[in-house]
Image (cartoon, rainbow, N blue to C red):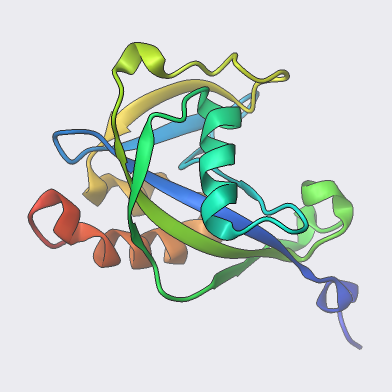
Length: 160
């Protein structure tokens, strides 16, 4: 028997690996959970992934003080775990098809405002070492974080 989730599409999504001046990456904790992640969000109809990632930064962390410095050359996908199918992502998707970007933060920590868009998606944020990312990711996103940490490692002057 085929799983009903296999008939659901992937949600188009853009993600941001935002680097500070010392090579650390911004991670934020989803409101009401213990899950930490990098900013990411849906790509609207007619919107490019590049436009979407900058819009999502402004909505989710309250700043557009960033410039795109790199782009992962392929779409990455993940499937939601079975217990989240029909609940997460509005119940309409099996997971996400993501385009990821490395960005340089051009502002100051005070420019990051989690309350700029209501309701806030995140309730805390911090700068993390690139090598921390796979360990902080929820299991179904871990492989993507491992790929991105390797792909964008040259932005912190070393590999992992």
